[in-house]
Length: 238
Image (tube, rainbow, N blue to C red; front, side):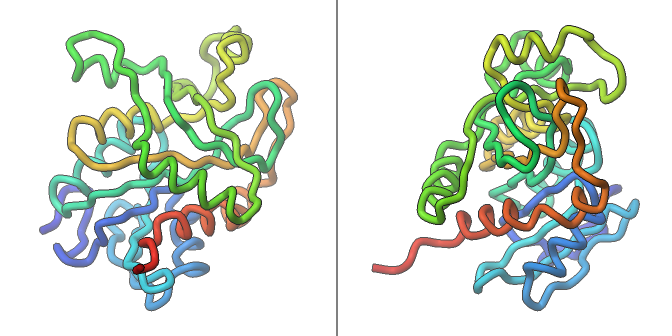
């Protein structure tokens, strides 16, 4: 069954989906990590692929930029295609004591968006990651000796401009990263009843003005992707 945004056949999307924002990054991840990968969505050029990683069936597709776009795809994946786990694998701007290339697991997501309030009676929603997914990534990172920061992120509606004091406010509250999707994804997951997590690579430092090159943003996030996929594998029998 297709939707206005997804033209995949009903059985062509796995119940676990990796969700980068950039559809070209989704294509690169699929080509690098999936066996028997098959393109399953091209509608609106939001490319999606399904294949196997070490025997686990998984899909990867783009979500676009910002909470509204991410929420559209997350809701339709859950409601129409029965997806039960969505992991956002993306980039973020770093704040404070964090470096380019560091991996950040978004335990909670604050926001300047009104999206969750619209669904929560005007109240503040504590938008948080699924604990089991979070623990799996933390444990896998420890087992593989991969450095990982766990903490809060801030999902903003404003890529350009916005609050000039925002970075200082985030650092004061020990929030390590700023991006545009996680708070909405977590809110949708809480309402729709699926598991969600955001794992992010620091691609820019907001306060220092340093940036990861564009090609590295698209293709250089393999360490994060491999960590997430390994974390999602079922536990060995026995």
